Length: 556
Ligand code: ATP
Ligand code: MG
Image 1: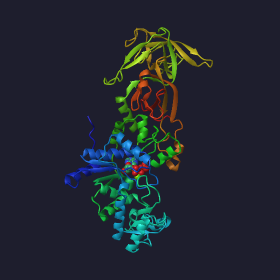
Image 2: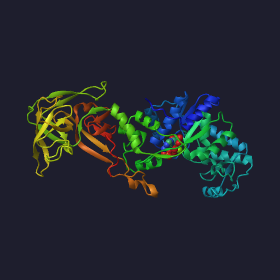
Image 3: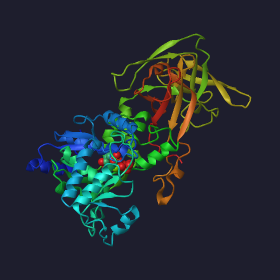
């Protein structure tokens, strides 16, 4: 049965609003800035906004908050659309863009000027800061604060028309330089930026600030509950000031919740961008990154991400969530959906001398131990097979308890096949084992061995003549400490140098030659894997390890 979760504070507010009739239909939005790829923190916000809309019969918009042309790109817009779609959330109508409302924002800026509630200021950035005061000291009025209305209007139009240099002037709201809330000390509404925008091109020479844009975007779209993260709590009085002082078509309200932080990784776009731009990882979709595209490439399913997000508290405090919690949901989901398969990562040949030279037996093996809907696999069984190096040890005095694998003179069961014994080894010049010579115990396919034959354990295997050669990428956590860069240190110094191991010459069971992007597998005894979307070719599949079978923590 589903666990009944207590309602979070936002659900409580929505229910009250619906009951009182203050809100007829819930309208939420997810408002990413297209200056990077989405990460797991954004997934929390996506699940919350889309989830609330769905739960209360409302709708959710996808809107790009593209008011800052310097850092924004079309590549990010495309990636974000792909990620939200993949997570399984349909938005209302078309994708929306704050830049579609630039003309409206500008008209409202002139409106504030006409009302004597905004002015053009010529203090440079340093003086603006100085006049602003501090948390303990009130600010001082700008000498430009009392300009005549017509002069303000004419200067604002010159700013708009490209007649003013960058940094020379800003448009500021005329609120209160002595307000205890710094955000109300005549905040900047427009800056001159002679920068092309990814959608509006060269049309604008001035761009609105986040604060001047966000609430108005919400109002234009009829958003009822504008949900954002806690750092915007102090901005709420300003959000409300604009809504109160502009002829906006609706009255949205802002609510703040705690952001998701995960240990052993970073969830800041700036840091993720640095990792990508400096080549510490292999692009935004590197499977070691907590980006949505990285998780996808690693083989994580959207359902696992949604369940993880649903398990998180929606509260008024920021918290750090243990990576193990995300990993739990990934494993739980994969255990149920991943087809079973065998792949030998570090192959060692085992020749079974009592199996005839060209014998080829086709074994039928279930696709999943408790899911009949997944197709059976046909595994060729031959005289020469591969087992994993770590499953053989020449020291037959190792106790059965300690080493549940193959040693000379003893038996193991090959998964879904026969019981075999190791009889001898072939060594190379360095004394390394290069081959094990063994024999099969007849009649043990799906049957117990005769009295006196006690297999030490079960190991996986692949036919040496009938298999698919492949490459395997084993990922570990990207950072070796729980909070990278704490104490003011450089977070890059905490990168785990062994977070990627690439294995060549791995041997996958034949059906894996048909694997497709998006398929998920449990390689028996090794973990969960998927085909890598970047490096796989028709001749050489490349598999990513999504996650190990058990939580082993971080191996320092
Ligand atoms: P970052 O700090 O990583 O750059 P951001 O807040 O600047 O993130 P936006 O694109 O503005 O990124 O975020 C879109 C939405 O996602 C916002 O509503 C924001 O509050 C939310 N969001 C961003 N990061 C998190 C997080 N770690 N946890 C929950 N919500 C988040
Ligand atoms: Mg932001």
